[in-house]
Image 1: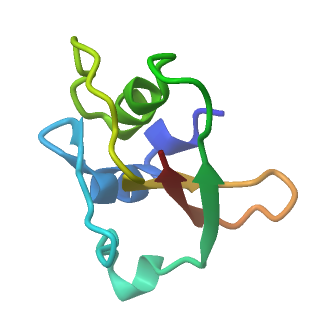
Image 2: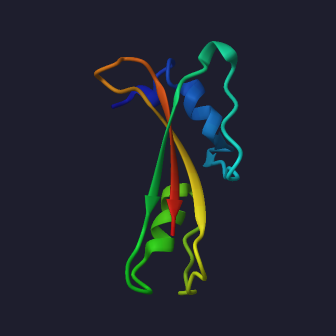
Length: 104
């Protein structure tokens, strides 16, 4: 569980942070890792659906490290937010980079 804060996991965490805040990546961007630390990327697309005003956009903003909107503004259409998260599954013992595409 504490792998990200260990010396082995710190370079992966640093690749998604900027000034101790989560970096915001565009749809075609990804974290830059040195070739020695290259890891496979596992991509998931997560579609959030629900009634208006329940907090779907606030949840995605909170997970992505962006400021959570204080006032309710209806999302028009679909807003896609990419989120990267490095992890080291216990079964494989090899780090992977999860790429989560939140569709809100």
